Amino acid sequence: MSALLEVDDLSVAYRAEGGDVAALRGVSLTAQAGEVIGIVGESGCGKSTLAAALIALLDANADVTAGEVRLNGRDILSLHEDARRKLRGRDIAMIFQDPMTAFSPVLTMGDQIIDFQQHTGLSRAARRERARQMLLKVGIADADLCLRRYPHELSGGMRQRAAVAAALMANPALLVADEPTTALDVTMEAQIIHLLRSLRTEINGAIVIVTHHLGVIGELCDRVYVMYAGQVVEEAPVDDLYHAPRHPYTRALIACDPGAIATRQGVLPTIPGRPPDLAAPPPGCSFAPRCPQADATCRSTAPPRVRVSDRQAALCHKVVP
Ligand SMILES: Nc1ncnc2c1ncn2[C@@H]1O[C@H](COP(=O)(O)OP(=O)(O)O)[C@@H](O)[C@H]1O
Ligand SMILES: [Mg+2]
Image (tube, rainbow, N blue to C red; front, top):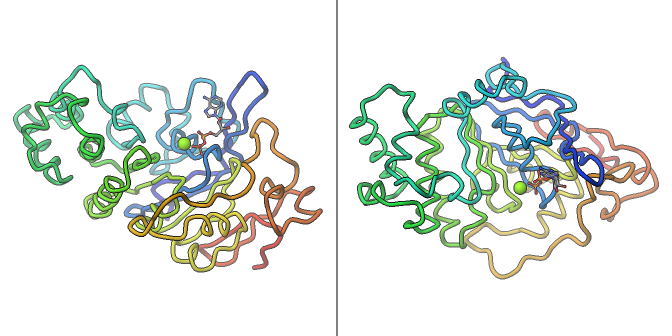
């Protein structure tokens, strides 16, 4: 059986002044209905580009140079803009880092959350009632007051809850959240994570959560894809990723971010060095310049994808199956 979501060997490049930026290089990923998938990696590794491809909303200067994204078997990146827009209204929903971007500043929350469901064919009163119920579900106790408010009149955490509610109204087959907690303080972050976890059962589709913070992944996800320099360098079920990480980059990420959200304190250590410039990725393994295990082969030859179990694989010369 094919998966609900299939990303097949996807490469995306941005046309830019200083040369093309190879933001995604041969990314493959699958998600089944009911699965929560995490995508993790440092800033600049291509996570948001992948998220944009999943919702068929790549920037105007982005070229899909290879591969496909299929939702229920349908190649979504080759659809016309009208069809893609329709898809985003019905089958795919997105939660952004900044919940302000999800809403128009000049309309009340009610006008917007009720509009999100125009395709349902329900009466306005019925749509309003659905919106109220959904707001209650995401923990907004005074739903009527929230519906009367403008986005800027709500706190950041409240806006993100409302954005989650708006995304869920369509009962999407795919929900993509790009850094949904990054703009929030630690307390609100914990609340939104708790909310997303409690909503798992409400969503019949797949959820893809993008974050640079491994703690978020541990709290929420079933399977994880670790991205580095536009590639998936490791994929694994979340427990295997924590307990038996195979790629040196995954190990470095875990070393920098060991705790769950609740126990996180102060400033975390970071991996020395920076991800490479994707306008000119290094030859060989992209992580080699920062990798404690790298040798001459790593620096000159692209690494193989080594499968260590039927659900775990790593892109590394040093990994033995
Ligand atoms: N519209 C764009 N034009 C040119 N380069 C871009 C554009 N969007 C992103 N990039 C570049 O693509 C690379 C990947 O970025 P992004 O997907 O945002 O990574 P992440 O979300 O992991 O931080 C970066 O080098 C970034 O500067
Ligand atoms: Mg990003």
